[in-house]
Structures are given as structure tokens and as C-alpha cells.
Image (cartoon, rainbow, N blue to C red; front, side):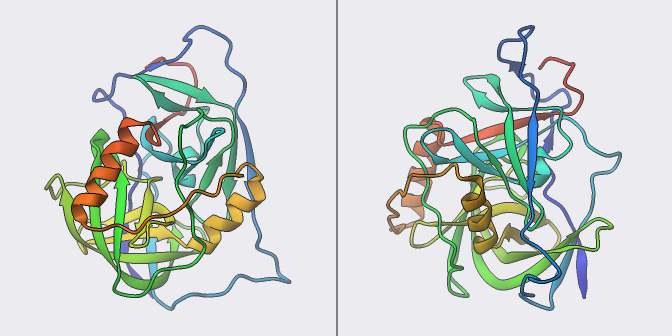
Length: 277
């Protein structure tokens, strides 16, 4: 049963983000977008839950926007949300105030996740897990709502499914209840899309996908669906060690360090490929 509309669409650039594209005027390789879809009539994916969320499409269609991405391999593999990359003419990772263009993206049709295969190198990568955490455990969502680094703490409610717009396809998700934010605020979480959600043991267990401001719910991709996309990309060799979060202050400190070191970055979508930043 549908349980209300929701959305965590990437933050529209408009006049609020004046970001130049690196190498403006220089030739940029065309964006190569592949799709990964493990669904088939012979191997349907399991239904996680009867609870279903409907994520409303952006009014007016695709627009220049911003989301979050995070490094999963030091050689340039980054995860983000599929709705952040879909429909873009070019995609760029934040590189010191410039959008550094990427050219190789794999978008999942199973979940709201996408893999950048030729992004910026990173000094470290975040550890992934294909297993959902226990019900009632805490989650730490990291990203850039409205372009501002924000840590959201939530509690896992359970497994559910989500459907985008008028699509008949559902995607497995984890549903979380928001508990608090650092810094404090109650505005929209748009822009956190594509950022990591950490379990208490220090593993990334999904990608931030959508939120419901009215109900205080956050939806993230199912961890096993995220893992299937990562495996299909053949771009991730690193196996970072996960360290449990000791406290909220520990999570806040790690987030600040990852942002400072460029392990979690803003990612930008230009829908027409012609305008500068």
C-alpha cells in the first residue's frame, strides 16, 4: 500500500551554487552511461515488505542539480544515487570549487544507486556491507543538504519498497526514522541524495535515496542491491576495514574528516551540457 509521497531530489543549482566546470572550453569526453539490471522473469527479486513508498518525480523534469557521492575505491570508483545521475548531459565531482567531469557511469535499474568508474582518486575509501543492520539500530546519514555538510542520525524501522513516479517497478529499500541532525535544522534533506548511510558497526549499508519531511522518514537503497551494482561494475578492489562508531561525536568527527579529505564530495548534474557553472 502506498504510504504517502516522498522525495529527496538533488538540490537545484539555480542561483545558489555558482560552480565552474573544470577545463571550461576544453573538449570533454562524452558521458558513457551503462545500465545494470539483475531482474528477469526467471529470477524475480524478493519482495522485502508490504509497506511501499511512492517517490514523486521532479516537477518539470530533469534540471541542473547537486547531490552527494562517496569513494568506494581509492582508484576513482564512487557511489551515488541513480536519480542524481539520470538524465544528465554531464556529471562532475566537486574538486576544490570546480566540477571535475566524469565520463563512465553505471546506473542500477534494481535500486536507486549509480557507480562512477572514472572519478577522482581518493586517499581512502569507505567500507561496504551487503547485510542490513538489526531493527532499531542507529544509522548515520552523511551528505550535503542544500550544499551544507550535514549528519543525520536515524533509527532503522525495517525493510520496505519504493516506487518512483508512475513506474510500475518497485525497489527494495530500508526505512529509517530521523532522530536528530548536526547541525540542527528541520529543512529539506534535498542534496543528501547519494550520500552514505552507515550502520553502527562502521559499514556503509546503503545510499541515501529519499526522505519524507512530513513523516520524518529516510529511505536508503537495500544493501544487497548496492553490493550487486558494485560487483557488476568491476571497479572496486579495495576492502577497507570498518570501525564501529563509539559515539555521536565520533561519527561527527569522522564525517568532518571524510569531507575534508575528499572521501565524501558533492556531485553535480548539468542537463544540457552547454552552460558553465
